[in-house]
Image 1 (cartoon, rainbow, N blue to C red):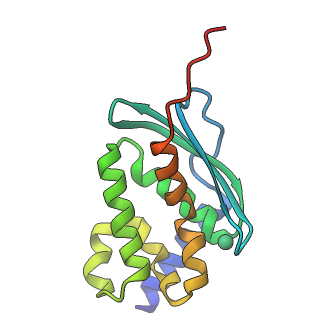
Image 2: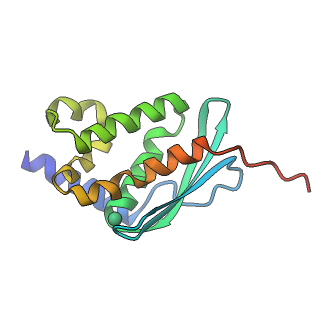
Length: 150
Ligand code: ZN
């Protein structure tokens, strides 16, 4: 597993240094702020929802490497997906981080998100890794942002 671990470490470092979809989404119609007081991570998620489809997604924030990398990986994982698919992805991701399941059997279907599987050994960090996902759920649950008529 050590080569796999190194690869995962690289993915996290890369996404922390160069977060994907890191911007304000001007035409977002759903938005939510998330805060993880245990670590001080803050994230804002912007979603452009078209019907049930996540047409575009972006984030802004400040936090530890795990929270930033996780938000970046999350935006890549759910862009173009439906709301239902995104919620299922979060469930699988959450299970990966918190349940004592056979890791290898899940890794293949998780793609790059599996890079964060290592936090299961550090329960405090699970909140860093799931912050962006909880905030995505909140953004999807939020009322649609009214379009300005000015
Ligand atoms: Zn953190």
